[in-house]
Length: 478
Image 1 (spheres, rainbow, N blue to C red):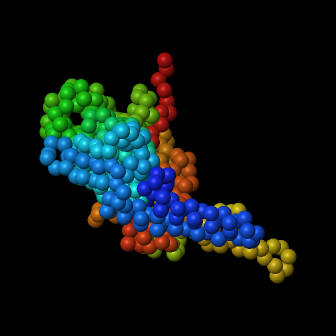
Image 2: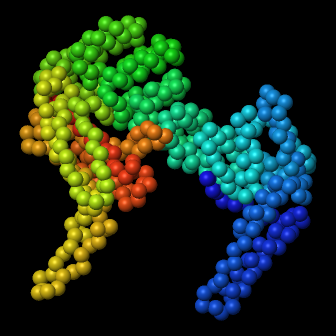
């Protein structure tokens, strides 16, 4: 249910009964406030007002305007007996169209005509129920007729329901671009980045525009099994959409080939239709990837700048880069676990592992809030309450040898949420490169509430990711 601000009463004669009711309630409240009472008495008849407005719409009492809404390309016409005042209160366009006529014929796209009754109902009582498939047509109507409050409400609904499934996000992104809704565009882009595997496996992957693809491919926060999965998804997109050579080559150059092991690179060169067609455009990147895997990182860094994005892992779900962790009843006790990751993406480091220890605390208290006991005998300051704390996650290497020369580690924690039978990424927390924990981890989460958006069947679904970052230690003389 989407609830938005109710319409304000007007001053036309056909509404005197309703206005009188509101006026009586207002004057009664004013008399109570000015009567010397210590506390005022509120008289609220707003629900009665809403019911009467709905009755006006349903029965057409005192109607002075007829709207005939025709679905484009059909003979279907829906007739609405409405009231000039209420339409004009919300929409300047309606006010202008109805200034000297009492009947309008409106041509609307089929999807907009199908929800026009909801749109009109909102103008009368300020609320409506939205389904996913109705969001865009309702937003179009609100935009066309200048109903700003409904425009904002539907946009908020779309942002809040992005995690309801991978399907709408692509269409909603393109719609946000067409309408200039930057907040919605960014929300769609973030959802697509965190759930790219689900999106790439859906029917809407072929509907991704070259512009959207160009926004996604450079991002380091893409959540994927590995870089090879992204290459295969891109190849499938190229096969479906058949873009120009320039678009295809730009997209192929956004793949981080050093993140793909040499054996898989050989297979791609031998079997990939995309590389068979556009291989020359990425030949330099493939050569650089082989060099990266053949040399030690320290030696490679003498000749190449390894600080570029091509050498930075994305949020890979493969076991080499992290591990899932399901915490049942996370509001109860401290938990700990450990896992191993590959020291680095270079083939030179393929056999080297780093062990990580993880501590989760549901109610960690900062030092300033921890219990402090006074020195005087038998007295103590009040202890801090458990609810004053917040969840904390600490990730540390098992030994100091974890920081190999020229390598530092970025950590990311993904929080999953189940929507329509699928586990999707709902939140992501990144650590500062020099930190052992994310400062804002679950800062707004209510882990006590069973229906919390952070929990799946009363369990916290995490995926811990460690991304090794190489540094250029030695530079060649200029």
